Length: 425
Image (cartoon, rainbow, N blue to C red; front, side, top):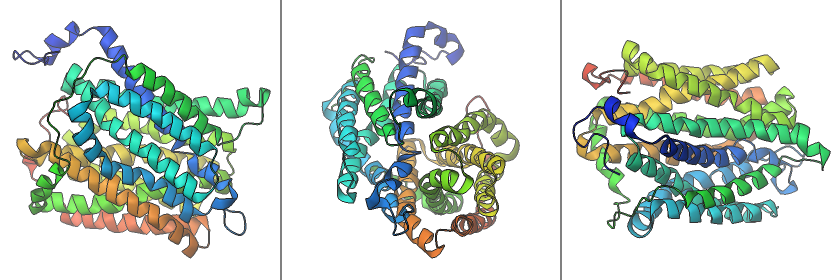
């Protein structure tokens, strides 16, 4: 398919020529891609905490071991450019690589359901995430090759919808449908993810043909963006984003147990409560262009950090249900206004020939290094805090407060770095 703008036409004149069937196919791809992730990631810790291997002497969740399991995704994210660049881009059509990876991933998830030892679960989840992580970038590639780049958001939003939808569906299974047949448990989320993986794997084979480039991408290309660290604003943003990503991983690891054990939310409802963050994120994504145009990157990103700081403070101060659910919604503000904005800022200041490298570098700092560090710190912080939720969340709140101060003092973006128009954001 030719680029919609190949002849200089505007998006407004070319988009109507694209078949609605293509939009539906790509949207379904994104929905399934993130529904699978959303099925297990928000509540895997609850399943692990039900296994004796992942419990402390008093029967509470061992966040040290659970954190190490969650570390498999950051590890896979670091390795993914090698897999995607050296194998998928050179030898396999993107849709076939996604299909095979998802089917094998479903097999890996089914194997994990039968494992109770730390070693078995760790190896199983590492294999699964090594299969899953490369498909994230490949679904983006499939979309970019068959759909106008400037309208990528209209396809990508279905990923967030899929994440939210599966959380609600799983709650219906746990509280309504499941009890009619058997005693549903939180570990069934892995079966749901596996079934979706099998279905998505078959469906992926029917996606528009996206042939390999025959030229492998350089897996270390993101290092070209290291030169951007000479820009003081980018350097400050990169350093701060590393530490903010630590908090992001702590949120993923702790909050599911906090909502159940601290707040008292029924286990079957935890996945739905957590989707408040994604619902908020979708709303904030709509407001993000306006926010950037009116206030710029510095204020927008500071609001994002501040939202997560407030979230952690609320968790530390109170365990009231209403406040806790409201604090979960703050997660969406932070994700949109900080984590999305930092990638937009990198794209705005990076020279044209290293824009992709800048994105890869920033992803390795946050989704790779920062979240990996968060996985390693989840257990020690819990131990130091003696398992008290207020003390546990107070520590990342202090970290975010420091990040906010450092960011406000050190981040000095030029006015020319701001996006030109809301339509382009």
